[in-house]
Image (tube, rainbow, N blue to C red):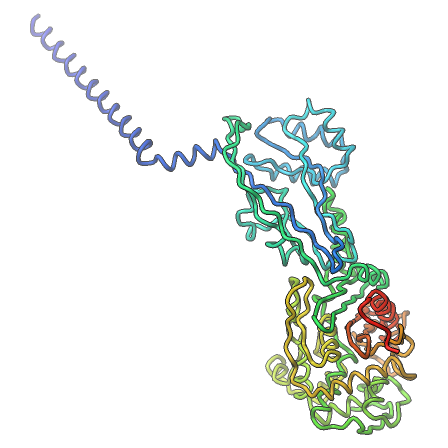
Length: 598
């Protein structure tokens, strides 16, 4: 009996010992875990705690205004009402959204957009649901606020584009930052916007200013408790442009709707006075809830979103003859050199003939420029060869970026025998030279490059850097005999001021101030028959010739260099020149610095 009691006591003692050791072990594990969490991983868990307890809100600065040369506002900020969503307030936000859709009577397209925005809204910061609300919409929401907890009205700003379509390609528009370029601004949420095109994009850092940061404490339900800190914001800088919006707005009205550009440069400074094109768009529409307007722009066959001044590429047509004449003069061919134009083809068949089928007869160089005689230019091109023509074109900036302070400029293309050999494994032919001499074939340019070229002719060989925003003048001096430029200026004066000139019917005389010019017509397809007229309005728009005009005024003291590139307009003298006449007269009348040259 005693042995059994002893055995039982030993068994209990062993169990007690095991349980005690187990308890002590658990205590050590617990103490070790607490030590690990509170000392070794202290900083990491503190950070996680702060993320749940503290919210960071990025405060966007008032965006800088955009002003024209006279201080007129082109773009400003406008206060607006926005509908925001905080998903932390209630889990029934989807039901509330359905109620709001019914209240505001949103159509199917608008419903799709607000649902997309609600889905993309996170819980860390409030998300934007409607950008710009009318006062009626705001009143409707506020009257039923008791049924809408997660959504709230907030005041913000939107960009107000005062000249909408006439300055759209120039100033650009705002949009949501892309993921790869958002950087720290992703904290601002979906309602924060950055420049996507134009000046809004190019000068984004200047216009945006510096963010402020607000740190707030929230409770376990994500609701506001108190402010922790707040840093100051720095407003964005205003931009003052060289553009004269009064003149540009008028110029825009003169342009045909399906495709045309007008670029005007100050011959002394390179400042762009006009930079506009059609068709265009209204960036104010992008603040509306529906994406219908954006889709209409994307589906428009005339491509209204494309900036035709510096991003569309065209053949320069007869405008390029200026380069051929200057190259010939530099090569020693005298301005009195006579060439007989018969009007017949130069290489057999129907190719490379003068536009005047009956011919111009015997011409000297100045007469050939006035009449834009193809045969004369072909003869010069044969004598001097492609190398000297290409070299002259390079000096005047063709095939190169102009350096304008806008994004996405294209350099155009200036072909050469070396390029053709490498690209097509073919030799450069006489046909290539003749094509190049009249601005056809492989060569393509932007209207801005043409304006820059004619400004250099007008100002004595200064190849200016075009500038939208007022800043220091930049240029390179072209290595060319100034006598040759003087001859070209006088020959261009004949083009528009003497009978028989291709631009004669668009001559101007404003208080003794006249204009010098060159017209051009660029083919976009080859003629099937010798008698084909690719200017006529009855043929397909896409196959019709481009109409071009470039010139400068006043002739005696050049101030303005202007180019009109009329997409598929027909003849340069008949279609582009009249537009240029109106714009140049508006500019001369508005410029009080010039006195009459009597």
